[in-house]
Image 1 (cartoon, rainbow over the protein chains, first blue to last red):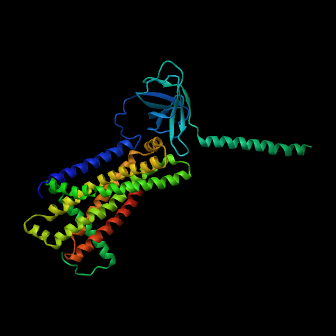
Image 2 (cartoon, rainbow over the protein chains, first blue to last red):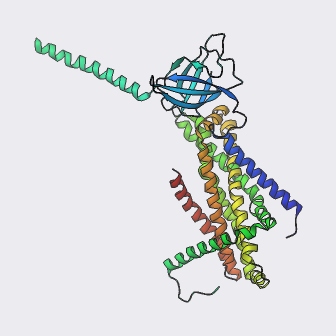
Length: 169
Length: 255
């Protein structure tokens, strides 16, 4: 087995291509995975009554454009609110500090994300600032429960009320 | 190779073969370190098993990805969620199709070459000649081929998945008009690093299994022309079945 230049170049190319593919798969596919060059950003926090199933790594968007990710979700024991840390790309440093944050759902099957609605202030969000206007996740089960509770009470008030009046007559 | 004194039945024969493969794996592992002292032999085998399988892997990856794009689009369109095509294609390729189809192609392309090569060495007494010269054929012939296959398989599977993804993107985004941004962003939102890792571990296990079977069948070929043919056939059948069986076990373990 003599050293063979073409063979070794071919092997080198193959191994390089293989590792390039592995690198591509590990860095480009998972949004919350290892991300090259996207670590530089600033973090702001927002307090929500309910974060639903928001997860660390979920996207943060402004006008539908991804501007950052959820870096952490914690719980404040003093006022029972969820404190969400948002990592925002430092390219987007002109977001008014009276902007609001809401937890929304991407499509019927999609996950939760934090949508930022820009405000009108002249001062901008910076590292460590807090978003004060927040809207919690809409939990579908609660909505359905509320709907059925209203529906049932409406029905029983109408349905049980009339026969009673009939009986009185 | 001493023949069995007692003829094996169906069950004992199968058990004996499984046991012999495991013993052979132990013998290979024992020779692993000495074989690493000759990296050029391993490089040669990575070339044989990996670089020369590259074209077929890329071609098949492209077509599998394109079919996935078409079928996925058709299915998801019925639920009005074509945007999830990226997720479906990426997870399907990373976790299942990439490792499994690569292993099946590897068994057919590289496994058969390994078996028939070593089998012919056995038939023409080259392995015996090596032993006469105090060269351990296990260390010199078998282990580099085994290692070459084990190293090549995960790389091939990664290339397969990547090309497949581009195939799915080609069909989904360019032909069917799925939004390109949604394709990638939904995928990045849903695919976790664990999914990539699962595919990698699967392909590594398949690489070990397929390479082991190929070198075992070659090394234990009956030294006749028909024996080499039989051993090659057995490599393909056993590798394919074992790959699919292991795939089920690994999938169940990862869920």
